[in-house]
Length: 153
Image 1 (cartoon, rainbow, N blue to C red):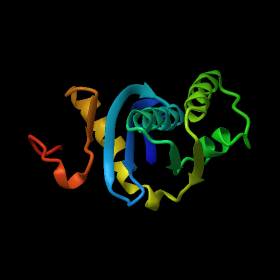
Image 2 (image 1 turned 180 degrees about the horizontal axis):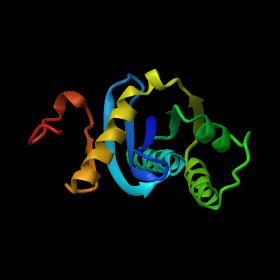
Image 3 (image 1 turned 180 degrees about the vertical axis):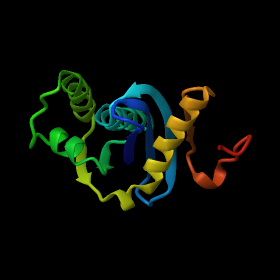
Image 4 (image 1 turned 45 degrees about the vertical axis):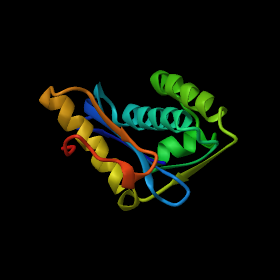
């Protein structure tokens, strides 16, 4: 799972992006969602939470969560303290979700290795700003079987 949060301004209009793949690297779900006005760190945590929820819905038991947010990864791993009260609440929610899996690995990746999640997060911001709804999601058991009714923007 690759996840990313985006905020235009800090705080500012924010969105989340998540791309979930199976063991073979095939995309099984994508999420792009506007979350309103938030900080970048709130967006990063929200993306991880939505991704973990979706992975759970898909029946995943083992998850490799990748993010370009070092703060998110280090805090979820317990190596950095969480001082902000809002992030403490989101951290607790994410850690509770993590406990529902057999195994969760956390990996900090460079931004250029998180391009799809970044694009989805920015799509979420754009759609929220345009007032066209707050989320877009697709999932499929196999990408080869998925036929959209209309091409996602």
